[in-house]
Length: 582
Image (tube, rainbow, N blue to C red; front, top):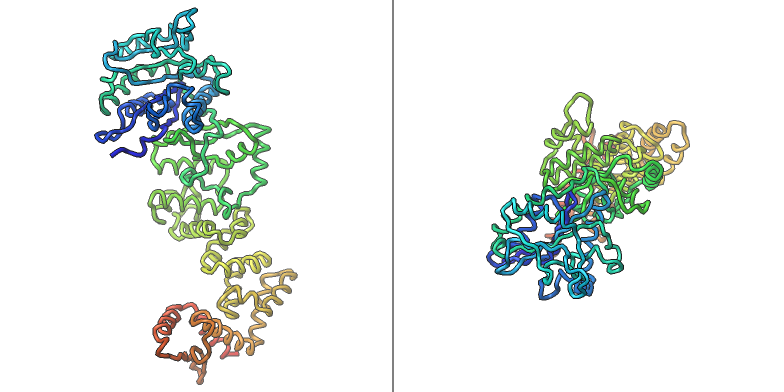
C-alpha cells in the first residue's frame, strides 16, 4: 500500500553548502515502501548532510517541476517548492558559503553513461542553443573525476539536449536570470544538472546504494557550516505542541496560560538591540525542513519582537540524540544563566515524566540534583517532585492565574503554594483563600494552616466561610493592624468562643447546604436532615432520611454519595464538638 508520507514535498535541512533538488522523486508502488528516486535522495541527504528538496507529490503529467514557467502558474507549488529552495539557498549564503545546487533527474534507457552532467552549456552566438553556463568547466571536471573514482561512468550533455539545462526556464538557470523571479537572482550560485541512468535506480535498495556512492563522490565539495550558524527566524516553528515539547520556561503562546512577563521580553529585546545576542539559541533540525527550539524561547520572542530576519543558533539534528539527551541539554542550557522558578520546574518535570515515561521516584533520581531542589546534601524525595508537578497541573488547567503569576514573580513562596494551596481541590476555595487571605495578610505557613482550620469551623467550604459577614468584618480590621495574620487568627478564635448561637446557625446552614448539594434544591427537612444530641459526655449526630417508593433508587444513590464524603461528615462532627463545649 502506498505510503501517505511519500506524497509530499520532502525537505531536509543540511549542514553544508550543498542543496540537492529532485524535481520528480516519484511515488511508492505497491511493491515498495519508498520510490527508488526518493530512496536515493534520502540516502544522499543522510550521508552528505546536505539541504534537500524532493518532489514526491506532483507527477510529471500534472506539472513539470523542471520547468519554472509551469511551477509559477500554481501558487501552492511555488510556495511548497520554489520558495523552499530559496529559503535553503539563502541560509547557505547567509553563513558565508557559496551554494552548490544539484538538480537530479532520472534518465532514459540507453543513455551513454551512468551519469550525464549539464551546466548550462550551449553554443555561443546561437539563439536556439544559448550558452548560459552555471559552473566553471574546471570545477565540473573535478566533480566528474570524483564520480569516476567512485565507479560511475560520466559524460557531458549534448548542447542540443535539454539535459544541459541551458534554457532560461530550467531550474538550472533559476539563480542566473535577472528580473525573472524576485529574490532568486544570485550569480554566485553554482548549479549542475545530473541525469542518472535508470539501471542505477532500479529499485529501492539499488537506488540507496547509488545515493551512498554519490554522496561519497560529492563529499569533498561540501563546505561545512559551523555549529553556531545564522538561521532564518521564519524557519523556526512554534505553532504546534510538538514544537514546544522541550520548552518549560513560562511563555504566552497559550492565552489561558499567559503569565509571561512582557516587561522582561521588552528588556531582553532592548539588551539584544544594544549588545547583540550574547547566547545563541539552541535549535533542532526537524524532518520537515524547519527548526524547533530546544533552548532560548524567550530570546526568540525578543528577536521576533525586534523584527530581525536572522538569528544566531546552535543547531542539532533531532535524529542524532535521544529524547532523554534533549531534556538534559535543555536543562543544562536553561539553568546556566538563571535558576528556574518553581512553576518552570513543575513544567519541566511534568514534560520529562510524560515524554520519558518516568514516575516521581525516577524523576527525582535523574533530575533532582540538576534542578537543585530539596535540601542541600540530601536526595530529592518523591513528595517534592509531586509538589512541583502539582503546580504544573494548576497552571495547565488555567486555575489560580494570579497565584501562578505571583510564584513566577517571587511574590508567593513555593512551600505555601505547593504544600497548602495546591492540595485544595475546589478552585473557588483555593482562589478565595489566596486572594482574600494570603495576599492581604501574608501569613506564614503555620499561620495559614491555623487560619484554614478555623475557617472550616465556620463553613466546610472556604469560599463561603470567607464570604461570611462576620469573617469579612474581622478581615477588614486585621488588614489595618501591625500584625495582620496574628490579629486575624486571634479575632477569629475570640469570635468563635463568644458566639455559640452563631455556631448553631453555622451548623444549620451547613446541613442546609449539604441537603441542597447532595439531594437537590427541592429537598426539605423531611427528606433529609441531621440533628445533634448530647447526653453527658457523649455527643452524637442523628441522620434523618425519608424513603419514597417512586424515588427509592435515587435516594439510595444520594445516600451513598454522602456516606463516602468523609470530608463533609468530619466537618459536621467538628461543629458538633465545638458547639457542645460552648
